[in-house]
Image (cartoon, rainbow, N blue to C red; front, side, top):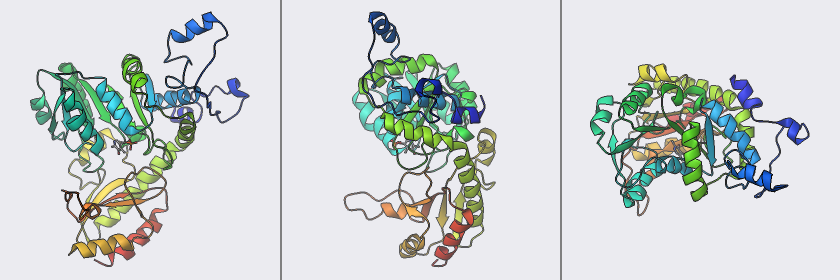
Length: 386
Ligand SMILES: *Cc1c(COP(=O)(O)O)cnc(C)c1O
């Protein structure tokens, strides 16, 4: 299906709501039945009919169709956060006594899920350097049920060969999950490479306007049906219909936003690479990136995230650089309209918190929708303190 069809029309049955061009927010917890036949028919599949909004809400259902189609999946579920999506997807695949192979340094709350939460229920894990397929294979045990990927990683940008990982896992009867938040389905569609379940923090690119926290899980009808009946309905981590409507609006411009961020981030990363105050730029689609070939093979673009090590003589110089930037906001998260910096020095000297293991001269940049030349002007003046 054409991307334009998905983003602009798919799932929108306008004749059902007065031919309104934008779908209504069906702000209703409950749905009524005119007779017992209708009641029984609805209960025959709560995933596809409307019974109660913890299960399936009509506004959210439009979003499910669009998100599934974007990932080339049969179906999708929408959650109240990316972390809820990750947790539901992982929980659906394991039970006590099972083992997970996970790429090293996954998203922080994914790490907590594995290290603190799942350990309590007898599910163990091993972290591996996912850049090396041999290391993934060596970490697989007899009780390994799940291979959890994040490619690229949103901090280190480490990449896994998706096709090779999917093939290996299939041969060993292991489910694969990937967190595809970094690349978005515009630039990477893991299901086409054979990955089973795709999760996103929709807070990032899919919504794209820094005003909704949400998550999605995409996969086969069979896997989604199981997650729906067990984890989704039990844990109840749903998105509100209002936030779903905002996400539908956000998706209208997903393709435009991704290409804008992608082109700008390549331009700005290439600019930074030329500056004497920059030690190294880490951007998966710059030829200097160690996994550039693999990145080019399986991703059509990267979007706005990359990092740089600065040649700063001292922490004070680093702090000055951060404070001189005026057109980049300082924040965690990313994927919205606004450009951001996340300087690792911000994690130093926090009372009660151990020092960040990341070098203090590292800055993660997120390039939003502004004119890249206007951002380069700001970087140019801030770099002068170094
Ligand atoms: C933000 C993020 C998450 C968590 O998503 P929330 O919407 O904040 O719960 C998971 N994975 C990655 C890669 C993220 O960047």
